[in-house]
Amino acid sequence: MKTHAPAPTDAPADPASGTLRLKSKDLLGIAGLDAGEITLILDTADAMREIGSRPIKKVPTLRGRTVVNLFFEPSTRTRTSFEIAEKRLSADTLSIATATSSVTKGETLVDTVRNLEAMAPDMIVMRHASSGAAHLLARICRSAIINAGDGMHEHPTQALLDAYTIRAHKGRLAGLNVAIVGDLLHSRVLRSNVALLKTMGADVCACAPSTLMPPGFDRFGVKATSSVDEAVEGADVVMLLRIQHERMDGHFFPTVREYFSLFGMTPARLRRARPDVIVMHPGPMNRGVEIDSAVADGPYSVILEQVSNGVAVRMAVLYLLAGSSEAE
Ligand code: CP
Image (tube, rainbow, N blue to C red; front, side, top):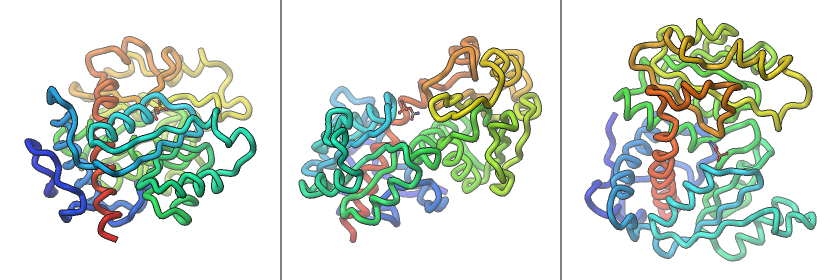
């Protein structure tokens, strides 16, 4: 379904002026978005991507709006691309380094955000180690809350940029076979991607050792297997997920070497996929663990395209949420 995204040749309209908006004031997860809203974000990102190819990569769309980036966990791609997206839309932005904030003196999340809200930001982009942290803030904040990753729960803008990248290569999402291989248990990227891909009609096969398979996973309409060969057979898209050592409390597999030999994506394993397969990874990658460098840097890899597309997708989300909050 095509929707009416802003014309690519013009600066996007003031968000207050049109009907381009999401139903909620916040983006907390893919759960809660319907297929029409997902399509609207992807179509809007198409228009935003064009702005990034101009000599002067800036439009006045969010002039006068203030966006706070509040990252309680490390990030390279998400934080940087949100900052670039905000600047391309002319928002006033500030990024709070939690290591040098009063969080280190024991201030709670709620008090931190209430104090930031007292300075009247329009949107807060937050990453936090606790699942549900963004939902908690959305209940108490006037500002729009954008979830940039909450614990093992959701990472909605990652799934949206993944969908945008898949659609750019395949022209559609419905009916595609997507294999997702890696640390499924600890992955918010998995949960957001499954929600999005199922909503848009793709078939998902998820693969991990049984120790890294979320319990009850088959309830989500996803095929689950511990055989990489089975997962990759005939796949249009192969998505690798990082082994998240920092969230592991105990041993989930004997050694990294053994994990790579059984689950690592190698050129030989990839040959079972369709000839026009694309290989994705949200980053950061553990080379030689979940992915061989020959695959990560090989001809089927779209991993750096995912990063580029993240800017356009986050511009689209900021733009559409600005329209939603203006409409309330
Ligand atoms: N994909 C992703 O969320 O990367 P960062 O942790 O670097 O933001």
